[in-house]
Image (tube, rainbow, N blue to C red):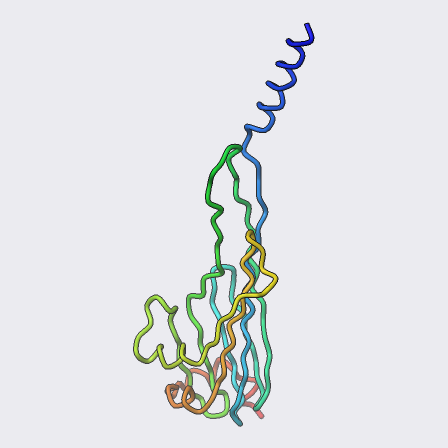
Length: 167
């Protein structure tokens, strides 16, 4: 009788543990802009979790954070690999408000020579406290005159940034 109870308890515990269980995870990207020019800049970033803009005055720094929360269903019995998902950046656009120039830079995977100059000014690093389940990392863009030289005139900015140009 006791043996049947033990087998029953072990069977129930095995069945409860054999269900998939959720694992909650976060991917967090911090984009930092160091504007080392005497120009007013607007930096826009398009990602898989939304679009954000960093307005920057001359010789200043600012940042934005993109966060992607997701659930992964893990099988009850391993071994298995736990996938991680970074925040995908699709496009980055720099607007030089001071002289109506702009340029759009594509993601690294489809970068052109033009884009590679831009990407050479970005320093990426992972957070020291990043856990196995979370992707926490930062990309710093140091904007200088070499990037400004890549920008091209775009008079549609007069319409896009009406408030600035009314001054």
